[in-house]
Image (cartoon, rainbow, N blue to C red):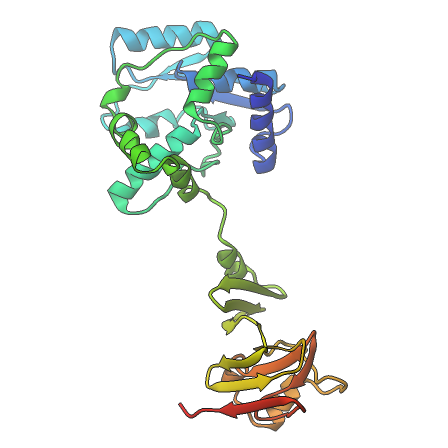
Length: 323
């Protein structure tokens, strides 16, 4: 285990997501386990001003009391009474109700992420993961590390940590001990594929649809391109090389000339060697606005050499079949 390399990975993740200001204050919610122990140590080593908070739910009697004593002694943690919750959801709500005026960090890892995704798929059908930053400001700097990495880090740095004996009885414990091993048997990349489901980054199509300024094009594959011009969005066929014959909707376009392509109209297109815009060509030919985005153009580079059915070009043969 290269502990310095692991710390660098965490720092890059923090900087990329803007989770903690350089050298800033952060309160780590510590349980005494390997994940929060690793987080506490890594953030201190990276130069952050780290304090610790332990929420004692009192669920395991003497063991819970021992966890609280460990966290107070090892991390200098403030220990608060978090009793009263019955379900995992209620306990989580209590846990995050403390120190809301501080930036708080938890030791959630990629391993927690895939367990959460699996549970939420089963419970709601939605593959929603743990957020890098909660709405109340709680951040998760270890979400790109795996649980075995935090344990290896603790061992390499000589850091003692506690093991929660009740983990096996929780929903996460069932997923961890029974379901994930079966998924690994089905496919060795099961965990990585589940992790991809939890990524918060919007798809390229979502980014295109959300944008409102200027114009943008996105190749969707399978011969389709999504186009956005300000507040208008449409699909068009991806440009294809005109080698022999091309079918474009009801159009059949043929040519033996080199370097030609067939594509849809784009704002600003002009006829080759002329100043006339293709938009004006459509207006003069009384082509309805709704038909223009799907009307084929024959182009060489950025120049339009033919507009089938409207502007002919030598060496380009066009016919249109009835619907």
